[in-house]
Amino acid sequence: ETVSGATAWKSRPVLKKLVRRLQAGDTLTVVKLDRLGRNALDVLTLIDVLKKREISVRILNLGIDTAGAGGKLFLLLLAGFAEFERNIIRERVLSGLETARAKGIRLGRKPTLTEDDIAQARRLKSQGLSAREVAKLLHVSKMTAWRAMNS
Image 1: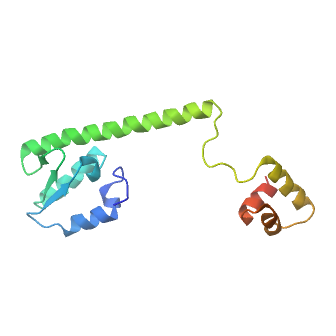
Image 2: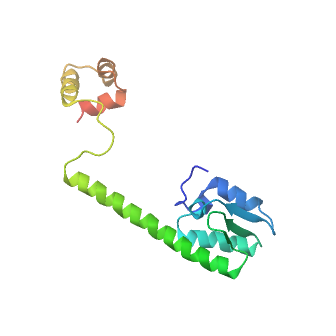
Image 3: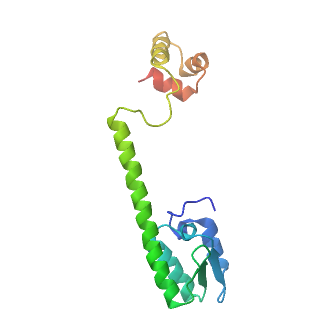
């Protein structure tokens, strides 16, 4: 599945479909805990739902099986650490973005039009050209031309 493990399991179509297909006595096997989810509460909710349906969970890289009490405790601790790690990464990313903004670094996609192109678009508008005509001249979409003409 291409959806992030940070997304709740009920909002992940492939995982949700898999959970629906599992039957009592089955074991859901994942390679790593973060493939199951990165939110401790969400992972524990999923495991609880599976346990009520008599389905166990195995995590291969950790050698954990929730069929036993010790496995569930260990999983609880690991899910908490996975969520903590995700929060730390998020804080670092936000801090990095804030630092970049403070340094005046422009974030996001580079502008399609230069300041000179925007000035030309405004001049062409004053001459009566439409956004479609300006777009053709500047080799951009009509919407990009319209924004330049009206900014």
